[in-house]
Length: 278
Image 1 (cartoon, rainbow, N blue to C red):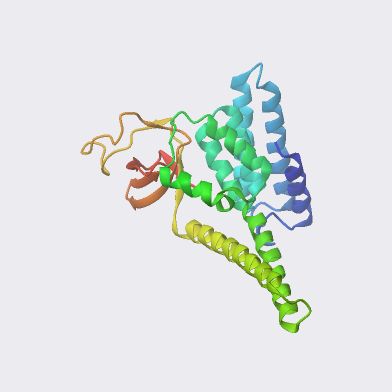
Image 2 (cartoon, rainbow, N blue to C red):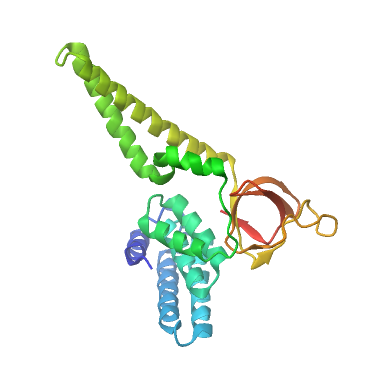
């Protein structure tokens, strides 16, 4: 549990700032009610954590109460906060709901990119997913040669872009006015330019993908993927069902169904209610 994030939420609510929203966000609940709901959810979470070892059933009930409180702040209070989604994911992970834990961490990750706690807990949740999806060979090769795109957080890539831009224009300026002469200045500007363009392209590609592609997570305990959008008409796509926590990209949506692409490139139809979009 990220206690720092929790404290920031209380402080932001008290000041009427909100996390990631405007001043009207808390109007439905009100500031005092928002604080009360959050503090009650925190109390439920702590009680659940304390009971987890000796009384799991009661602990899960407390976690459910905490999740309900956090969700109320999001849905009724309008607080679109990565910290709240992170808290929800923690509660789901401790209660054993791997699918919704992965979903919560992915939502938190979008609102708080580069957060180490989110990344660590998401990795832990993914390790508990029963269905193992191996990535496509081409993707693994791309990750090897374009490691900076896949491994560096967006915030760090933006910082590298800003630094490279400063170096590029500074060297270009001093070389043009004659303060520095010779090939090293041109080489330095060239390297900085290449680095800057690479970071800019990486950020642009990532942003475009987030806008044009819906992603989701299987939240049902197990779901049979079909070769078409009808359970009685189409055969299963695979010999084994997909378990909670499997992540995918949406290819097409129809009433009651979605065609999804898994990390290894395979596609299947999933019924509505077996998954949630990030």
